[in-house]
Image 1 (spheres, rainbow, N blue to C red):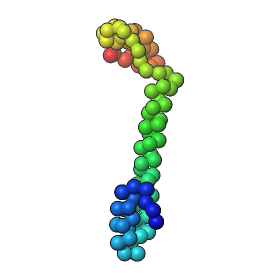
Image 2: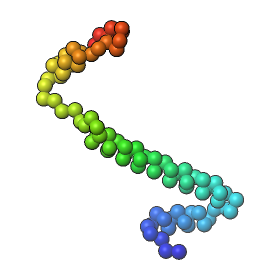
Image 3: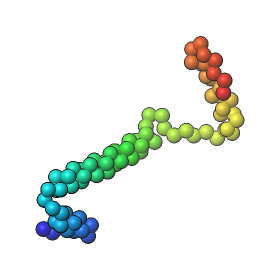
Image 4: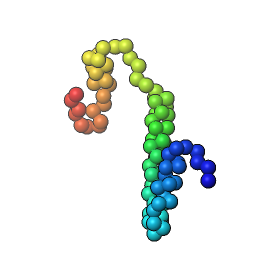
Length: 85
């Protein structure tokens, strides 16, 4: 069997040296590893989409104090609750 990378060859050699009864567990471990890698990849894709999503990135040239004052002035208090920032 031709291998694609050096690591693939190393992994195959390690697997060949394992006793047959542990091979089902090895398959489960490899599948779990693959799912974890795919999950991280999906999260990165979602994070990349969020950067360019509906709201976009915050861009403002005003000083921080002015931005905070503007946000505070436009808060509704969430109904009857009084929110003090």
